Length: 363
Image (cartoon, rainbow, N blue to C red; front, side):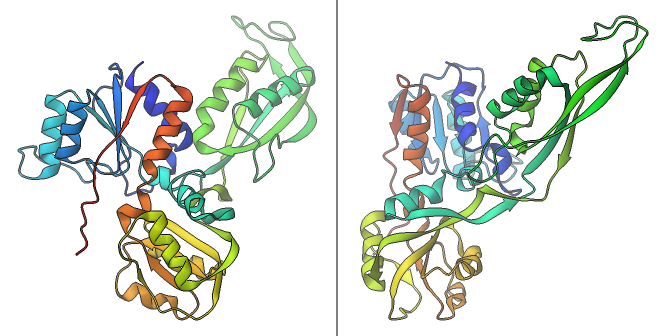
């Protein structure tokens, strides 16, 4: 199979449109049309990672953190990023990254953390906005059901825990076919009126091309009318962090010791204990201290994340406990997500877990 087939599969779970504006997710090096022989999964791309890919005969590296994050003005090997680029190109190794798009995906990094901790009924902590759109199209009544189902199958009409959602209004459309047309109804040169249904459906923006293709394929008209509207509604299926509940109450220290075991971290930095039981937990993979306010607003007893700065711990204000488990530690299970996505679609494709270690050491 080709490299783009693997990356497209990942983007079905983590569409690139979900990434933050500052990010650089996607295929960073390599030809998407090259054959994919085997893939190495990692958190960070380093010189050691590329050496490992070579030794395991992998010509594709799938990473969480983008190797190229800022623009490169030269590639002379003066730093590790440039040396990695040189080495990857020399050995014909493609490099792909799924970063904040996987962070923001419904079943992404934070959701996997929640599963490892044992949270139940978790939802997105800070849902995204501006990621939804609405379409309106007009179809003969006789073909309305067929077209609606085609839109639904393409992913349209999902609102929260509901699917196949649409609004339908009956009306009358008119058109006159000109020379060279092949009208579904009416005749060349004559004004025709047709009983039609206006179908309105909301959908995630990243599905626009898929849905439009489906409409064109299923619509009986030679020139179907499709109107698109941008929405500012909250998209509850994508965003930063999650919040959920433990099955049973735990002591604060007991819960942090549970975190140490789950994430294999030798130390957890945290704000002062408040001397109470904890049950509602908010969390965010990576550097998530920007969500402290949302965690407090959600009524969380503990907020779990990484890379919390000294003064950011003060934001707890005795309303919750902030626990920093480490950046790498919080995202280490990302490789499992990549593996499961690829194996589900391509069960015989060779996928390897990198043997990388956390580059941050604790004494």
